[in-house]
Image 1 (cartoon, helix red, strand yellow):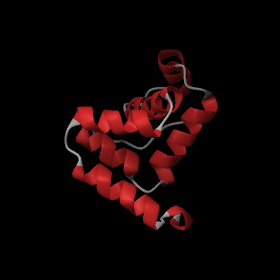
Image 2: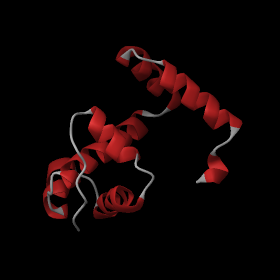
Image 3: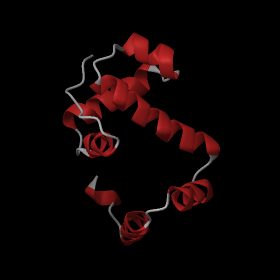
Length: 101
């Protein structure tokens, strides 16, 4: 993913890292993304939480409405990704265990 790490992306990262007010961050998300995109991103974090808790794909699909493809994508990131989901789950007070298929 190094090819997408541009000056513009670094600017976005600086802005996000500097923001500590959830309402201000939400306002930025509303301006940057569609409602659907915000929901999809939040859903992926929920899927990561459930995968790290050892839930099955079927249970996650039923609970979140996420597709099997989305669940598999999140699972792959938990197993082989850059560690972003693990950091996010740690912030939320959960340890990310290896994902099960």
